[in-house]
Length: 292
View 1: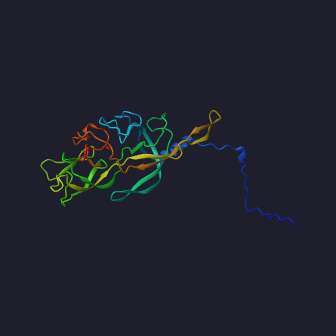
View 2 (view 1 turned 180 degrees about the horizontal axis):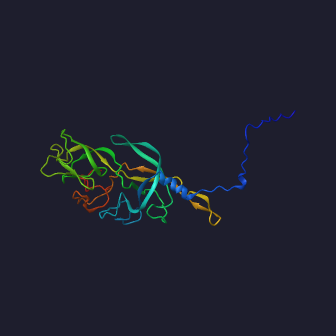
């Protein structure tokens, strides 16, 4: 059989030939960091570590009990520094909860190689590390039902910055600054001598009320997509070519529940001397006080 004829196409316009074999392509690591910071938001980075406080054995099933402010939610947190990261690909996810679904916020963050305030200290994230916006009160809103506590101090799911509405099961509405205050730790503190939900005469428990409020969210590292990102770089001064670590990519998730930390029940309305606003006060059902 005759061979198929090769179709020849005539060139159109000017022809450019790239001799890629004789050219080395290098990443500018400093420019990469600068690009992230130019489009980024400054966050405070808290490094996480599983807490051993109160555990008798390595695999103890008991939850670590923090009463000295060293940590929360089963982890010890330490401030590592401030870092400017670039948020991208914000997304939402529906999480089933008791009363329906709650939308969770996730995002990807590009992280530069070094801290803003520690130029020689590398930024190394890991799962459960905590981040929050520095020098800017970025607030979001949340609503929930609360059972009034006999002490007159109620802990919410998140530490409140401002209460918008508060209505109890009898239809009574209360106002911040009139019947109650929001303490620095985010608790609702009822004023003595003023109207308050109090105790339900039927159940003998605290009266149920609904509250809508604003709080400052934290983000927690959920996944590390490019934890080990390396690239070829060239030192123009020395004429050497090396492989170096580059900025990497992580997935962060905005907190949606942190009501699982035991407290010692000695809350005075100002956090009981503890320095973490994500802790939970005692529950009135059983040994622990407060909402679950």
